[in-house]
Amino acid sequence: MTLEELPPTISIEHAGQILGISRRSAYRAAARGELPTFKVGRRLLVPTSRLLILLGVRDAAVGTGSEPAA
Image (tube, rainbow, N blue to C red; front, side, top):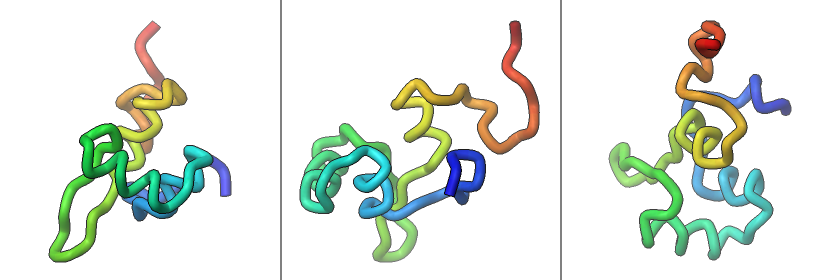
């Protein structure tokens, strides 16, 4: 799966895999607010666009099909 194929939200476990950290470290980072999350029911999800921005990979236009301003 490429970065462009990521869904709008991913699990904390998947975010940890992308970051190259363990599941436990990913949950700890989320608890400390270092990993952006939001809750849907009982699930904690990571917004993919915010994760990619945090990593400096993409700008806020992820998934919109628009190009970043020059």
